[in-house]
Length: 504
Ligand code: GLA
Image 1 (tube, rainbow, N blue to C red):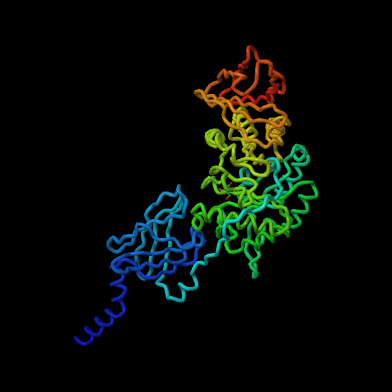
Image 2 (tube, rainbow, N blue to C red):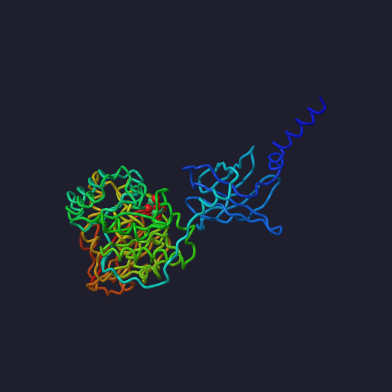
């Protein structure tokens, strides 16, 4: 009997011993996460202690290999943070702990709860999951592609439709651009944003998803209407919506788009921020796509979207960019729109024919702002020589929306061939005066009221380089107005704007 007890005891030690020991230890070594679609799709984690120094790397399908930062052991738990290169990511603790035979990782990343399970890894499992890195080109100046002599105009799917975009909607929008007269007013690009990407085939060729059965046919449809088709991608493994980016397929994807007949690419950093988080690497990866687009031989307008990091205006044109986002995302509310718009006051030196600052797409007509707020939006954007990419459902536009998007004189300010971006002349309390020099020697002048009630704004003509004999035309009112004694006073509604054309 005693022998039996001793034998059972020994067996229990053999079977449970390592687990028992492991359960009391922090989870060092290699771990492989169960396959998951959950952001950020962790695949493996390797933690080691060398010379008393703890270090580790955690790998995800979004961000590749990330060092485990502020790594420490607390009893049987490993606690660490990660940085994906985005300065706005709050570094919350992630906690790894052995539960039974598995490792459980919990915590928080952006707005997502993390709850991932891993098993102890074999070396061959880790090898299979190693994350590839690819070389970047040395700095070179990409030649001007000759496109976008005036700021691009058209439509983009994101602000209204988000990922709910499909072939049918894009065709409806193309039709609406024609029937509403928007195309003839200059809005020619039909840009599909995030949400079209499917999977790569056996040769690595990226396919659209089921919502876009035939991209070439869609491009033909759009072209037949005198319009151009734009597409969206990211230099990282994942787009911002988690769909495949160009990582490892830059030239191949550029060729695919050219073969479809694509005319415009918006290239959005997204998960690429984890791989390219220095000025040099971000420039290199945008240059790589700039060169790849030109190597296709098809004229493809190139839009950089890296949220204005690393003073993008100072190098955007060198990497082949025709426009570059200068901020994070706009939203359909006055606070965010005006914050972005009025923030652009010192970017004028970077804009010129072929190369534009991009304060993000229009929200006019999406319903989140008042008429006066949308007038401010459009007035600011045309003074900024911003790309005019409508972001609303063009098949269901009110007359008010049409009148804002299609005002010929406002569009002419934006599209003026001198290609000078406007800038702030003065700010006093809640009112601001901006000007934009125009090709014929006149100026567009914006009088803005950022305050919470209507306010009288006085323009001293001298402050914008004109004398008392200047001619004034109110663009939104569609009529000439009179200055008196060298100045012009007008009541500007709360959050509203008056847009003048001032000439000799
Ligand atoms: C980022 C961009 C947006 C839009 C979305 C799509 O947030 O800044 O303009 O393209 O990604 O996921």
